[in-house]
Image 1: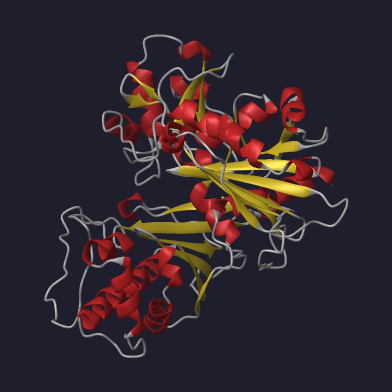
Image 2: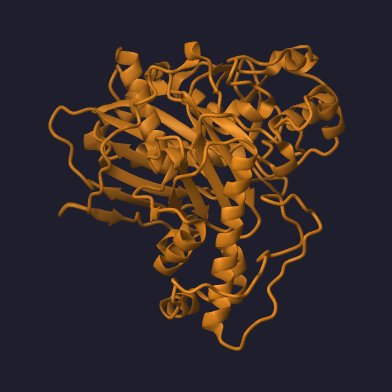
Amino acid sequence: MLPSNLLSPAANLFLLPSTSCSPCNHGIWISRNQSRRNRRRTTMRVEMEVVAPQAGNRLYLGMDFGTSGARFALIDKEGAVCAEGKRDYPLFKNDETIDWARSWKTTLFSLLEDVPNHYRHLVASISIDGTSATTIIVDSNTGQPLSKPLLYNETCPDALPLVKSIAPVNHTVCSASSTLCKLVSWWNSADSNKEYATLLHQADWLLWFLHGKLGVSDYNNALKVGYDPEIESYPPWLLAQPYSMLLPHVKAPGTSIGYLKEDIRSQFGFPNDCIACTGTTDSIAAFLAARATMPGQAVTSLGSTLAIKLLSTNRIDDARFGVYSHRLDNMWLVGGASNTGGAVLRQIFTDKQLEELSKQINPMKSSPLDYYPLTSIGERFPEADPQMAPRLHPRPENDVEYLHGILESIARIEGKGYRLLKDLGATQVEEVLTAGGGSKNEKWTKIRERVLGLPVSRASQTEAAYGAALLALKGARLFMQ
């Protein structure tokens, strides 16, 4: 629980009216004509004028940099979407490896160019989210990367023993994919430039192009490098290390960093008072988009894997199960991710089969089949068992029964995950919103509602770019106070 002096005055800034709008008559999808060669490298779609803002109203721009592409969402003060679009990353290569830094930078400027011209003068603030633990070590004078970025899913097992020797037991950084392990690995292998180096996360680096102040991050992105959002500082055990001089200055997500640089304003036509705000991770931005605001509300993401996030008054961190907490204003966002999920279904059924078979399922009837659907050996949450084998047998002759059994088994795993969070001390879950492709399956929603014994519904907004736009709105409001 946060002490009272840390309760944020901005705690209610996400309590906007939920706006669900269909495209107006001007809504169109635009696809630029490109050469065949360029079409292989980047694609662009922009949905314009979903809701036209009232004259003089300010707008707020959020950008999401995910694993395979980036999106933008432009919203008004009520949360209505005025424009949105997406870009795939152009895959530049450098010595047979992908130059991710160049791809992200190029995509950032492409998205800014995609924002409709007639809206740019209304943009009051911009925020960006990026993949968690994607790490870039840059020159502290020029901002140029000193080595290739280390992606969210890359591991540095060479650094793990050293990190475990200095960090508390079961701390979030005690994972080979943590930002701190990546920093330690770079520190121990770099020959020079350590004195003039700064650690940034993907979102930090991209925002730097807009505001020009190196070395600024947010406490969601900084969690996996060891930042403690409860005491609002890096812990002493981390500050005692020689590489602590690379750590960025940390602010709350959705905090003004400064005005946009003059060259950015003039290039894209943003107003002089437009500010850049600290961002967050892509998963936190997606949670913000779902508009869960009360303790006990949760969001289950049913994508390739199953991930759950629960708003709690208590902070829970336990590396044994991959459970950790992000601070979200005056509450904690407790989460875990299982290896079960939609990827298993895709191995067995086509999309058409899933649609047709699902129609025939009676979601009110319990399935006697007991599976543990995995694509390969190993589970992380709610059971931490690297040797767990997939269990998808016996397979009945009737595919409707088989799919029913798999969907219900995944729902049981989801329920076990929420029970584990409660057992570890988190707030009891009371309502579940759903994001991801699985949220579209109404029969699965009914099955999960029965298995969980809770109200389950589909989140009206699920795009992380929308959550980043809400952060931009929050930052603009705080800046005006």
